[in-house]
Picture 1 (cartoon, rainbow, N blue to C red):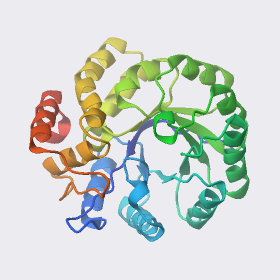
Picture 2 (cartoon, rainbow, N blue to C red):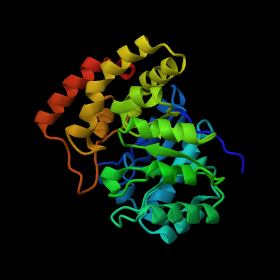
Picture 3 (cartoon, rainbow, N blue to C red):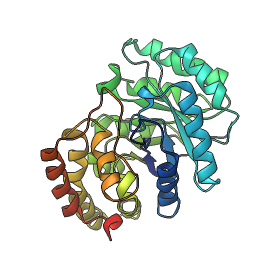
Length: 299
C-alpha cells in the first residue's frame, strides 16, 4: 500500500444531538456544509469530541451514513475507533471498511495500560486485518498509556499505518519522530500547541477549535508552512485564550457544542451523561473569550 499523507486542518467534528438526546441529522448537515464551504481539509467523526464513548454501534453506523450522504465526496472522512480490546476494534473496523472512508483513527487501549510491546502488537494486529489506512492516536491523559517514540517509529514501517495524532506537549518527540520516519503524518491533538507543534515538524492538526474557526486554523497552518512566522504568531496568540478555555472551563466537547449552538451551526448543545451543560456563569465567561477572538463565523 502506498502511504497517503494526511495533513492540514482536520476538524474533530462534534456529534450534534437534539433535545431528546438523539443524533440531530439536520444540524449534522449544517455542520458538514459549513466545513465543505470553508477551509477544512478533512472530517473526523466519532472521535473524543464526537462523543464516541456514548454512541452505540447502530448510532455510529447511522452517523457515518448521514455524514457520507451530506458530504457528497467533498472532503475525506476519518472515522474514530475507540476500544481497549484489539479484537473488538478489528470487528468495528471491518464493519465500516467497505464504506467510502479515508482512514481510521485508532486510540491506544485505554484503562488496560499495556506496555510498549502490547501497544505495538495491538496496532500491528489491527493493521493485518483491515484494508483501510490507520492513524494511531496517542492521548496518555485520557487513555492511561503513552506510545513512546521508539514504538511509533517501529509502527510507521507498517504499510497501512500512515500517521499519528499526538496530544503530548513534548516537542522533542515530534522532532524525533519526524527525523526517523518517512511519509508519515504527525498530527497535533492540542489546539493550544499548534504553533510550536507545526514548527517542530508537524503535518497538521486534528482540531476541536475548527468546529467554529476552521478558516482561522487553516490560515494559521498555511502561514507556518509558508514560513510567515510573525503573522502566524499573531493569529495563534489571538486564538490561544479560546483554545485553552475549550478544555479548561468544562470537559470537551461541552464548551465547543455550546458555542456551535450560539452561532447557529447546531440547534442544541445537548450532550449525554456523564457530560453536563455549562452553568450560566461559565457561559458568560466563555462568551467573552469567544467574542474577543473575533472569529469569521460571527461576521
